[in-house]
Each structure stands twice: as C-alpha cells, then as structure tokens.
Length: 271
Image (cartoon, rainbow, N blue to C red; front, top):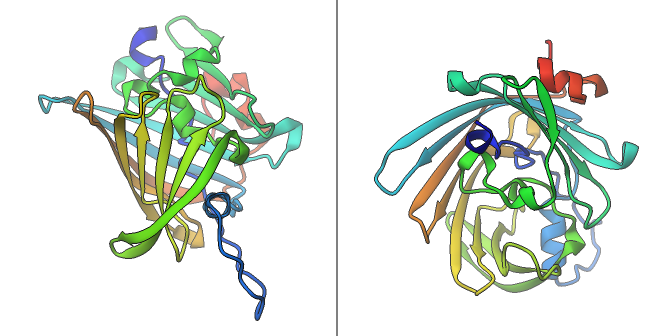
C-alpha cells in the first residue's frame, strides 16, 4: 500500500493566498526583473489559515480515471519555529486509503527540504519521508511533492524573457533555472498576469531541456484571498494528466498548532 499512496502531501502549498503590494503614489516605477515578478506572485499570505477539500482526478493515456479526495488544513507560521507554513492532508476517498495522512512543514531557510511525514492507518505508524522522496509523484499525480511546496525565491535564477498575451490578460513570461544542478527540472517557464500576478501557466522542462509537462491554473478569491480553484497538469512525455479541484475553501477558521502534530496526523483535525 505504501507504493500506492507514498505520494500524497504537500499543497497543495499550492492552495495559498497571495497579496500583491502596490507602489507608492507618484513614485517612478523601475522596470521589473524576473525575480521581481516571481516575488510579487508570492508576496504576502493574506489568510492566517485555511481548510479545503482537494479532489484529484488522475487520467491515463487510455482515458481511464482514478479519483482521490483529501481534506487539507494549512496554517501560516511566518518563521515561528523556523517554518513558513504547515500543511496536513487526510485522505477521505477511496475507502482503501481513508485516513492516510501527510504532514508537511515548509521551512523558511532556503535549500532546506520540507519536513514530510506519512501516516498509514494499516500500520498505525508515522514515517518521515526522505529528501529524495520529495521528487516522487504526489499521490501518483503529475506534480511532485516539491512542486506543491513553496520554493524559496533564491533557489532559482529568474529571468524576465518577454511579455505576451495570455488570454484574457497580458503576461510576463519568466524563466526560472534551479541553482541546484541535481534538480528534477532543467528550467520552468511561468506566465504571470501583469495585473494581479496570479500565475496562470507553467511549463516544466527536464534536465535535457525537453518539455516534460504543462500546468494551467484557475484562481478563486473568496474573502478577497487568492487561492487555486482548479489546475490541470499534463505530462507530455507520458500522455498522463491530473486535474486538481479545490472546493469548500474556508479562510481564517482558527486552526491551532495542535492541529499540525503527529497526533493530528493520526487522528485528523477534530472540528
């Protein structure tokens, strides 16, 4: 069962809220760099915590589909105990994976791997996942644990290549090259709207420079908080794709530190 569920964490650090800061009135605006654009796309968490349902629909090249539903709990730490945030996932469906949980601690220190822990109800055991396993597929999907985590800005070199239309907006196109030569990817291209800075498309290339997968993102903003609504990831080399659907999103519900412990990983959040 470990191999069936070994990839189930992280974030959906993707389901987070961002605020784009505005410049001072009347101040002369400097041309943006690639780093500036990526910084604005992740500038400030507006929500203190979030609860949501994450549904994954995995579709193979034959069109066969597998559906997984998880409950996600996320809390901003802002550097407390060395963490930027913590995320807890608890699987609800399918029945044979019910109760499988992942606890993810996203460290603030650049280059420090996330703290990933897996709970398997059948073994009644919590297991810490290794750094190498962060390149594994998240729940067998087309994103890895590392994709869903929050990379520190300076782990990559960001270059603003151009602006172009990305309907219905004008977008900055930013190339991000990992400084770590052992990275799974050779580079990423991100399309970021010039107005609200919510990324709408990401292309991932492998270390040979070949296109590996594409990601399209739709956003929602309940309570004026930006968060993913839907994302589709296509692996162009295997013809496999995954749809991520985020529903029942609630912000600032009052999650506590006790909701992000190994005990909560085993029992779930009681609320």
